[in-house]
Length: 136
Image (cartoon, rainbow, N blue to C red; front, side, top):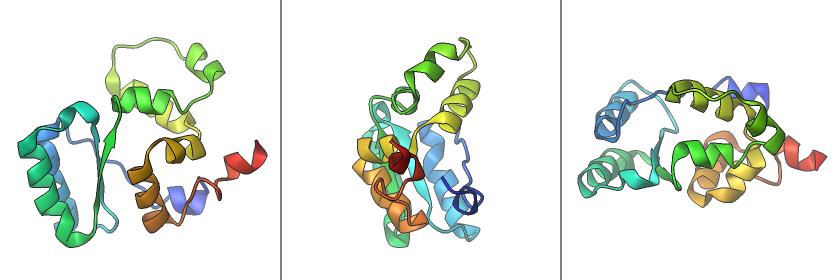
C-alpha cells in the first residue's frame, strides 16, 4: 500500500469478539471515518453480529469476516518463502504483525470481497490498482 494511504490506516485490537461492538461505537463517537470491523469467521455469533450491525449500519461502516480465521487469511496472502522463513511463536499479536506487514495486498483484496469493497471506498485501493499486482 502506498505510504500516503497506509499512514492513515490504524488498527485497534479488541481483545475478543465480544469487545468489538463497544470498540466500534467508541471509534465512531470519537470521529474516526471508514471504520471496518474484521472478525474471524468463527466469531459469527448472533449477538455479536447483531450488535455490530446496529453500531455500523447507520455510519456506513463495514463488517468483514476473515475465513477461516485472521491468521490463515493473512498467511495465505504472504509469499511461501516468507511464511517458511518466519520463526514459530505462540504470541498471536506477533504472528499477526509479521503476516500483516508482508501480506500481498492484491491477494487480500481478491480473497475477500467485503474487505475489497471497504478498501476501495475508504482508501481508493482496488486489486487492479495495487502496485504489487502491476509487478507480477
